[in-house]
Image (cartoon, rainbow, N blue to C red):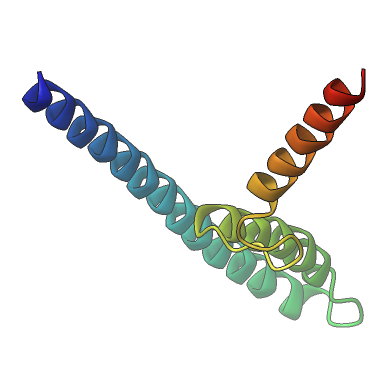
Length: 103
């Protein structure tokens, strides 16, 4: 019985790790396409319209999306902290328990 649980836990850890690796691969694919497309836009923009650097708007918009993608993939949340969601869940559960005790 204990061996089955260990095998199951190992399988779940493997699946989570595999999912994380897939997300990282997706991010790097996103980064590579960003670099190539922005380089192409720059190549087109500089020789044909030097008065207005329109490629910058694509760079800015897509760059913001890429930054958020990277933050999600690498679990970086500077605004909310690492365990913010867990702390909030505990806080709401404690509030609910106090409310139920008063009733």
